[in-house]
Amino acid sequence: MKDSERFINALTSGNERIIKEIYTKLFPKIKAYVLKNRGDIQDASDVFHDGLMYIIVTQKEKKMEIKSFEAYLFVICKNIWKRTLKNKVIKTDPLTLVDKEAELGTHILEQELLDFYIEKFDLLSDNCKEILSSYFNGLSYEDIVLEHSYASVNTVRQRVFKCRSKLVALIKKDNKYQKIRRWRQD
Image (tube, helix red, strand yellow):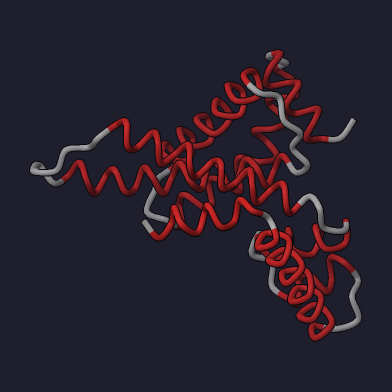
């Protein structure tokens, strides 16, 4: 069983041993992101917990296949933290009222965008998924050369470019893309 499936089953069933493994393996990356972006350890813990809760709720409502649990959780936590920062700014301004329904609607749309992106990402070759995952997770070209045993940095640059181009083509070819473009322009 893949880690993604194992982690999701553990979250939905409450398997404490594997949930501790999730925390051990994945929390440091979320913590580093939050700390780099004006947060503290408590913020990181809250964001990580909220991200896991989101996965539990959505998996119980609508079971979907997640190829890379780590990447999926990271993006969810990143979105939660961005929204949290935005709300902190809004809440410090006493004249601004936060419309919770609009906030929830935005979150749902962001998640739909993420699901659309993941659907297209999953259509790429395994090699493209690996190299783009490394690239999108912030690894330098030099680190990718070492991690994936490529010949040179130029080879990695070319692979990243080709794989990103394939991903963009898959996205633009889908009819949902036009709807998303119109929504983003409004």
